Structures are given as C-alpha cells and as structure tokens.
Image (cartoon, rainbow, N blue to C red; front, side, top):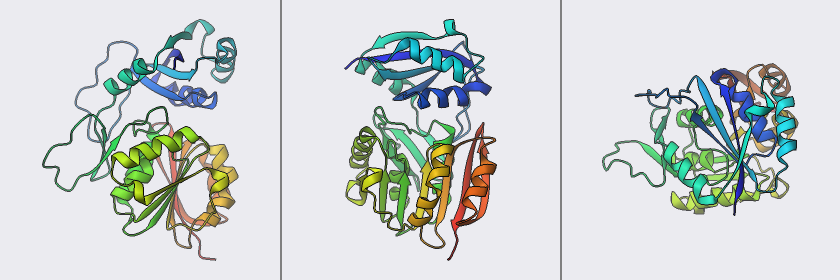
Amino acid sequence: MPFLELSLVTRADRQPRAESALEDLGAQAVTLLDAEDHPILEPAPGETPLWPLIRLQALFDAGADRRGLALALCELLPDLAPDGIEFREVADQDWERAWMDQFRPMRFGRRLWIYPWNVEPPADAGDAVIVRLDPGLAFGTGTHPTTALCLAWLDGADLAGKTVLDYGCGSGVLAIAALKLGAARAIGVDNDPQALTASRDNAERNGVAARLELRLPDAHDDAPADVLVANILAGPLAELAPRFAACAKAGAPIALSGILRGQEDELLARYAEWFEDLEITTREDWVRIAGTRKCD
C-alpha cells in the first residue's frame, strides 16, 4: 500500500514542536534525517544528538489532503513557509528500508539496549538487557526523547515480579522492556489497533508475548497495576489523571512523558491530588514526570 510522505526542514531547537505537530495531524511515522552534511560521530551511549538542520519525513495515508495538511502545519508552525513543505508518494518497502538505515542499537540507563531486529547483539553481552524492535508504522523506537526518558526510568525501577501498565503503548517498546527487565506481566493499552498489532509482533520477537496483554482503552478494566508508565501527550495526560489514579496501586511508581517543556506545571498540579513525590526530568525540549501513587 502506498503512502503520502510529507517532508520539511527545521532547526534542531524547533524539531520537537514540528514533530509533535506532524503527529497531531495524524502522521503514522516520523523519521529525522540530516538536512545538510553534519555527521554525528561516536555519540555517548544512550544519547540521540541532533543535527543543526533536520529534515522530518512523515508518513500519512495516501489519500490525505495535501493542501489541508500544508495549511494546518503553517498554522501550527508559524515560522514554516508553505513552499518549505514537499510531498511525494512512497511504497511500503521504501519507508521500511529508509527506517532500517537510520535505526542503530541504543543504550538507556545502565543495562537496557534497544536493537533493530535485523542487527545481532554481541555473543557476550554481559548483563545487558536487549529488546529487539521493529516498530512498523507505530510510534516508539527509543529515538524520540520522550521514549528515551521512559526507557531510562524503567531501567532504574524495581520491576521484579510486578505488573506494569503501559498506557499508549505504540510499538510496545516500554511494555516489552519492562518484561525483559524483570516484570512478571505487562498490559499495553492504545487506541490505535495498528499499535496493538505492532506491539504483539514485537513481543513475539522478544519471547514475551505470553506475558503481555494488549487492549483498546474501552476494553481496559482499570485493575490497579504495580507500575504505570504513559508516553502520550500533555492534553490526554491531564484528562486521564483520575483514570491513572484508579489504575495504580497505593505506592505504585509512575512515569509520564510526551510533555513539552512549559506544560509540566499544569500537570504537576493536576496529578498532585492523587500522586506524591513528583519530580521532573528533562531531555531536549521534553519532560518526564515521575512520582508515586498516594496511599488513600
């Protein structure tokens, strides 16, 4: 099935808002590429440095309204000129090949590694915990700062024998990482059936499918979990606060991301009713809020 690819160039400091705008408009996947010729050599483990000028390539349904997308983007990104937006049709295999060329093994925290499914880990990986991933068209490879923030948090959490709820699971990377880090069971919730399919495929690839339950939001019963992680957007996070309070056991640690810098204060006030010890961690223009469910 062909797709419509939208391409634009922006500065590194404007990349988070541009990527968020593309996702808000329905992009099924977004890839970041060097827009000039600035190679990144030998980044530190777990780092995802960006180029000064970045080309964002976003996939939409083949029948998407090009003019409507361009107008909406210019409204969301006032610095973007209409003639700076390019469109072309691409085939499925073209996008897969481009993505695989960009995705490389990455470390998060002390021992968690995300590997593309077609790259073999070293035979002697020591105590490394390795997740093999093929996100397909679902969000979440670890390359985005919000996913990286959540993966690093999971790497440092006590997950042994616990049930982890991953709300907005995308590719399943957070739920699968939690299982490979010692969780007994994980529940992935997403409103996109395609995300649930990608999560299931990735769970099977990592040998943890039997311990991962996947549900649409309406099918989730809100049974309290031992750990909750949600990598979505600030608006939905604010709306879901009461539901997350019901989904988390007393004393359960939580991590929330998908939050742009400047949006955290409202969410901190919102979540303080049910959660305590709230603290923020930032990465580029993105924020993670972590805390603990209050004991009623």
